[in-house]
Image 1 (tube, rainbow, N blue to C red):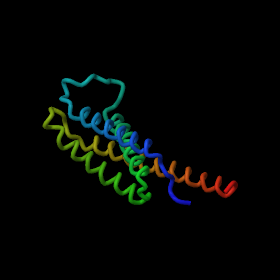
Image 2: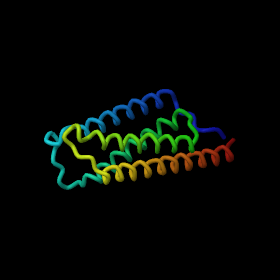
Image 3: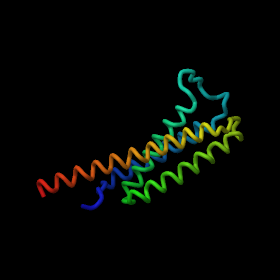
Image 4: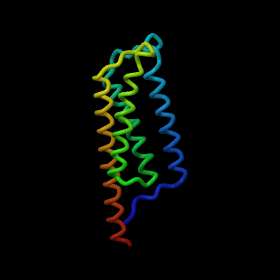
Length: 137
């Protein structure tokens, strides 16, 4: 059985959501420190990991909806987001923020978890569809 076909409308909304998430992440990480709300109960590295988990997951779904095969999809997600995370950290000092290797590591962990989770869910979905087709097809 071939890859899952995503409806055009779904592909469009996934892309829009990914662009909005990415713009929001960029804005959040480049807002000068004095203008940020204080979130004392949430560790900075946790916010980084969760933020990149969501961003990488959405990006992986966008690529999946366009029909990219799994290996290419994972490679692109990891290369693009790990590079972006490094660039994100390196540009923060220009906005009165600090670049931190631990933040990049948290970004990387979130990205890797998201890529693995999306691939796992897509594999389970493909397997279940094959089982249904065998029974009823």
